Length: 64
Image (cartoon, rainbow, N blue to C red; front, side, top):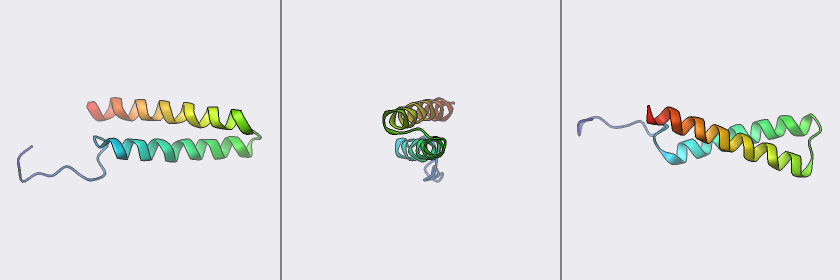
């Protein structure tokens, strides 16, 4: 990348963007789980699992 080329501020190479996207997807899936009847601990576990998987996939894709 030359000095005249700038990486997009929405690029997945930025850790904050990957975290934000993972949180949004985790909240969306958690919300769907809550609508399906998941409560308390199950709701938190679903959010954490989805967050971790999403962040891992985004990190893998960003490094390619």
